[in-house]
Length: 50
Image (cartoon, rainbow, N blue to C red; front, side):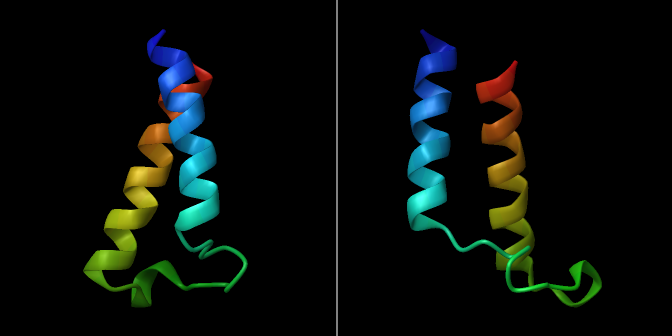
């Protein structure tokens, strides 16, 4: 059940949150907010896959 929740959350993230890889964002120049969004997306993706 948890995995289904995170899969749905990952799809929602994909729709709502910006994709920084498409913008070719340099991580060394990213703001704290951008790093927080990247971290959140990584966390949700790992939980959805595992």
